[in-house]
Image 1 (cartoon, rainbow, N blue to C red):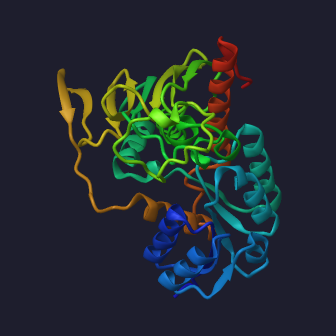
Image 2 (cartoon, one colour; image 1 turned 180 degrees about the vertical axis):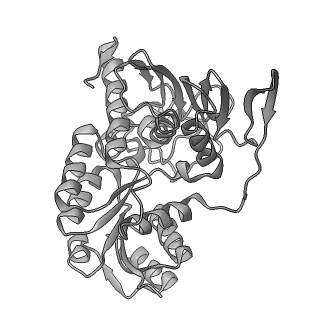
Length: 354
C-alpha cells in the first residue's frame, strides 16, 4: 500500500475544516500538521481530527516534514503564505480567490514554476458531476462553437460578515466579485475554454452594505454585523467581457439587491446549450435527428466536490495528473476581476493585454 501524502492545513476555520475532512475521506493522505492564529480553534481542530502537530506561526509548519499544504487563510494573506509554502518545497492547494489581484497571482505562479511544485486553485465547482459532464461534452464538440456565456448570482440579502473582513477591501480584495464571482467566472471560462479576455465593460455598485445601520436582512453568514467596522466594497456588479471575436460573457453578481435569489452559469453553443449551478437537474438543450431535444443526464448525488478536489490534488502531487485548476487559469480569472473594477472606476471599457 502506498504511503499516505503528509499534508498541512494553514487556516483551520470553516473552509480549513472542509479541507481536513476531504483529506480524511480521500484515504491516501493524512493531515499531520495544522496552523491558526486562534489558539482555541487550533486545539479544537487538533482534537476533532486527531492532529498532533499544531502551530500558530505558519512558517514553523512549513519547516515541518509535510509534503503539501492547503492554504485556507484570509484573502490578504494568500500571496504571502502560498509563495512561502512553495519556496519551502511544498505543493499547495490554494483556496479561492487565488490572490487579491492578478499581480499577486502571477507572483504565486512564478514561485510554483521555480519550485517545480503543484499549484492547484480551489475551484471546487468544477468538481460537480454536472460541470464535469458539460466539460467533456464541450471538448467532444457536442455543443459546437460556444459563442456566449451568461453568469448570474443574485442574493436578495446575502452580505457576509457586514463590517468585518469580508466587506473590508484591504482584507478581502473586494465584494461579491472576488467572493462568489470568482467561481462563476472560472466555470464559464473553463467550460467554454476561453482564457484570453480582451475587453471588459462593467459597473459596480454599493447600494445596501454602505448603510450598515439600516441594512435589512434575515440571516447573515459570518455575522453578526460589526456596525463600527468597514464596508468599502461593492455589493453588486454587472457587465460584459469580450474574448476577441470568439465569444462574450455577461455577468450579474450581487450580495444584495431587491430581486429574487437566483444563480446559474449558462453556455450557448450552435449545437447545444445548458445551465449549471442553478440548483436544478441538468438539462441540455439540443437537437436530435432533426427534432429539438432535451437531455437530462443522471448523476451520483452523493459525490462531494471538495472530496473530489482533494483526491485530484493528491494525485497531482504524486505526478499522476495535472492540477484540477491551474495557476495560469487562476491568473486569467483575476485579470477579469481586476478589469471589472478598473472599468467601473474609469466609467469606460478596459482593454486587456493578451
